[in-house]
Length: 126
Image (cartoon, rainbow, N blue to C red; front, side):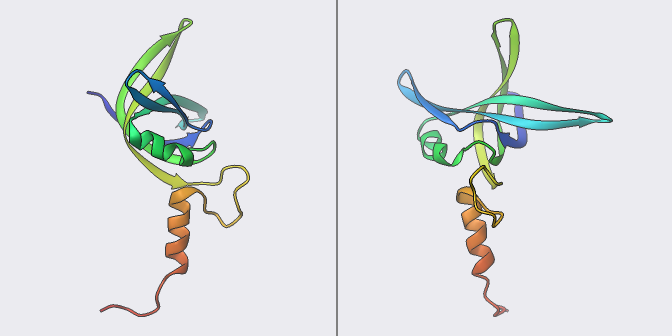
């Protein structure tokens, strides 16, 4: 197995579809690649199988920042090679997709962070 962890922004909203006896949620992650003075972007086609993918699809929206780990692979299409990632773990990092409020939080992870930020108690427990 070739396990890889990447962090980047989603290039489009996740899509869930039937794939035989199971469902798969697909999304693409753009990862900045900075080597010296050269700046580039690497794109990974990610797939998350089963109910976890279906449940997370609503939070995997274009522009959201995520950290994803899983098994690295490739696929060929029309003479091009694409990097693929069969997802084992997804962490929603938040970010600011288009149309989000200006409070710096978005998505489920952002709402949890925002709640934690405003629910701080001044009492020290020790």
